[in-house]
Image (cartoon, rainbow, N blue to C red; front, top):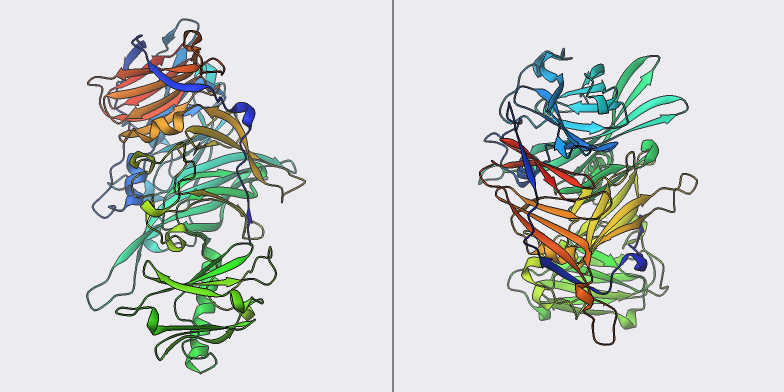
Length: 590
């Protein structure tokens, strides 16, 4: 059972006397650099209509910053060339764009990947060291480059390439993107850990009204190892989910993967085993080994003191139709003559005198009080029977939104505080361990997904940015090689009042901040860029009554004009680079 980890803010990073942002009319210089060839942007085909496909194609940042040199960024243009965009801080001007490699002249490892078609994914670049870069072509090829000295814009050399192949179905062997990639040297052996994303359609069993389908996000956990001067590629396992993934990053050494999503994420290898076990149980039921009606559909959850069991109310039934009886270690639930649970033995003992049940929001809800508080039950029923504990808020929380309590009465929630389609989702950060195929830790974020991710330090996993009250907090992984059980996220920095600011921006496409946290940008797909500088002034000495001086930030509105759709964003300490379909835009922040 995974441990629940709490996010603990560092109070020294919070500015209690920060009083918002003041609109500034000072101009932010924007330098435009016309592109000889437009950036490559993939388009979905007619079958890629799911929300997961929409996120994959429209929200991907096509401008990849170099973490070891933040004023340099790279993208792939429509000619399949890898292009370098660089800003010269000494001259205060952008350098000429430079083509460092051409992807389509590289020999492919498989004939079927020699061409592109509508529906293939975008190129993805990931820098894994000062001299290595990995590229995925969006189809099924991986390429490892030796970039040389990137400050000198040297031509990149191909070290290795491979085709992404695994235990896939025939229609699943195409289209991959890199979620995360890192280089480690373990026992003098170089290895590259890769998290490769792929959206797959899964057809559901047909019904009299016709078949239906659903879409899964697959994260293939792969290794690329250098063995006797030969790079060997292998897919070790796969994680799958029906929901969105907001964060995916490897820990150092690549033994654990941190994933944040809004739906349950499971190991595919374990899912196959569970399906086999389910089939075995169903077979036993047909032979009368399990009592009829023993496992009618229900969900359950727990706290340190009690357990909550929920049944969906049947049509035209009310409280008088249900009957619940409990002893110290058994439970019986009936709906008229239908038996839902028939004297089923519980995993532990309860206090039957404190058992209560009610019907609310179309659920029969039964509350059972544990005799031994503080001890978690891995199963509700004895002999490891029944469904697993539900930790998804969309199942457990049946209270309407307007009836839920407000966490902070001084900061009431508003409509803009809830992103589209996320109010009913339970956002969970999970730590998956490869060797044990287990989930070791979970962090519950409620219904608000992370705001964005950003690179703060070269070679480190990406920082995760979450909303905490009105602020936005940046979190970095705390990795203890000698203490794998002591896993947590460290509060690394704070963006004052930005959690509330971004909630009101409904058209945002990209969000990023500088490595020194001196500013943060919200970039729309067209026309507008919002710039926020939290370290501005003290409001001319203005004070709260009997309090310290008030600190305010500065807000800038930048209008892009007819520059085309924004496709990418990268940031450095004093400059930000925006990639559009027509130009490279350099925003001089300082």
